[in-house]
Amino acid sequence: MSPVQRPGSCSTHPVMKKILLLQTGGTIAMHFDSSGVQLQSNKWLNVLYKEIPELRQIADIELESVFFEDSSDVNQTHWKQLAELIFERRNSCDGIVVLHGTDTMAYTASALSFALQNLPIPVIFTGSQVPLSNIRSDARRNLVNSVELATHPIFEIAICFNDHLFRGSRSTKMSIGDFDAFSSPNFPALADIGIKIRFSDEIRTVNHAEAVCSPLFDDTVHVIKVFPNLNPEMLDCINLERTNAVIFEAFGIGNIPIKGRYNLLPFVEKCRDQKCHVIVNSQAPYDSVDLTQYSSGQELEKLGALSAGDMTMEATITKTMYLLGHKFEDSAFRRSFLKNLTGERSEI
Image 1: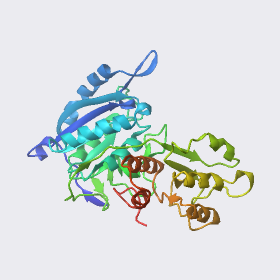
Image 2: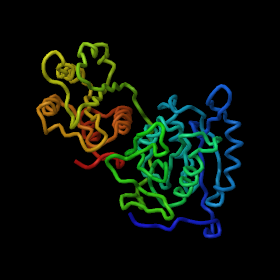
Image 3: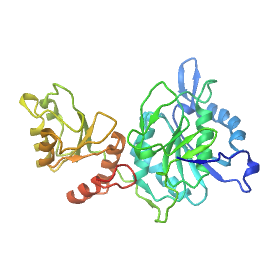
Image 4: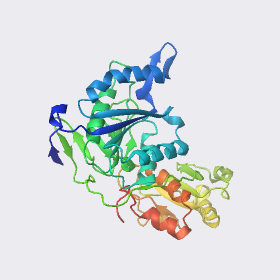
């Protein structure tokens, strides 16, 4: 990583960058009271306004509420709303920070990486493990880091958390209780934040292509976690006439049971016959699926299964939904899935 001096006070900026702060809800916006942790937008906004003077030392902040949801309730409708707003505002600010719940942040960041391509500004997702209203919250550090990073010419949709910046389509939530909640298992961090910001050589700092906004997603997808003794009869409840893709979360390098009563290949054959795409990811977050290594993967490949390579499960799901939403023909879907569209997978 190459070192970049961390900006200081506003006196180091002849012209303050304009950063749009988009609120969508999540833990960062929650408030503790006698009934537990609740989403209370008015109370949270009062707390945030107390933090804004600190943020204004870095940039000219504009705050806008898009929706206010626990991230467990965020879905493709919210992705579309958020993508269209970001696209609309892309030329009126220097960067965008999206406050989002951690549970599905990697899904939203991945989805928007496909829906919004070639943006001329950085879009940085952040949130917190502890509400901003709490004394021991990690929210302040994540907010300050995200706003500062958004002032740089970074052409990425990314997640900033606990002094790290990760590519959105390479990120996954790894911890429920640690401040170091996110990781990028098969791709280096885009930046590490200490006394200086150290940017990776992998970060996009040049962009000449035209920006595109196409937030179309199709939710006719099933994810099946493979485990010993998974009874294939339990999969008969899946209506393959209404399912366009099945994603296996397989063992290791991409293996599934292929012998005896737990043989899953007949189900894969049914998927093929119904023109339902079969995609294979791994339960192991590190390294890459390779269907050529073992007989199990070879049999899957013979039946037309696609390898998710080194993609995260979040990227695999959102990319599948994105491609289905654009109504690609079978061959075009396969080519596009295996292709690196927005930095989400290594080239084959």
